[in-house]
Length: 120
Image (cartoon, rainbow, N blue to C red; front, side):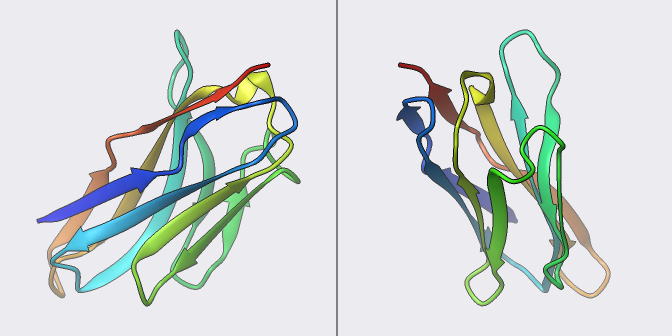
């Protein structure tokens, strides 16, 4: 079984910064795509940033130039550095990881979510 533990959310003023972390625990043969999503009240969950095993990254247009996704493959940890935060970035942020328990058994798991609130 694989679990994701997120941390780093909180309250920050507009223009401020936060770094989210997502640690992956459990039976892992390989860890492939990892992503950050967010869901604001009354809105659908949206993809914020993604990283494949080689480190290739992609971002939603709304966060390009402000957010940076990175991963530590040795420690199975994903990060999201968020700069120049705006009130519209307020949401619950979720980590998602896809990989393999064994050579053939895939997993696709989600973290519990961490609240990010941008407000003065």
